[in-house]
Image (cartoon, rainbow, N blue to C red; front, top):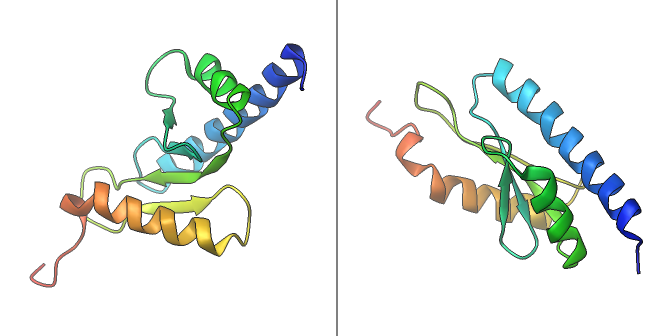
Length: 111
């Protein structure tokens, strides 16, 4: 079992990575990313309490799967990236989920 202090430190690292992703994605024209966890939960920085929520998810043994975000102010393909580099299974799931959640933002053949 991981001590509470260590769990909070791990959660802080997860939040820092989410903050870096938000910064990169904002410059690329995407909305604030959502971080998907293995239990199906999402965490975003658009509301307060993200650190507390990540800590609780980690304590419940949920693991980060990856990031998704939609394009801001225009239509286009959503962003998705697995938490672990090279995780093709997670990439495929994130792609499917992002396309499903943000299909209203996808470019259609008519456009």
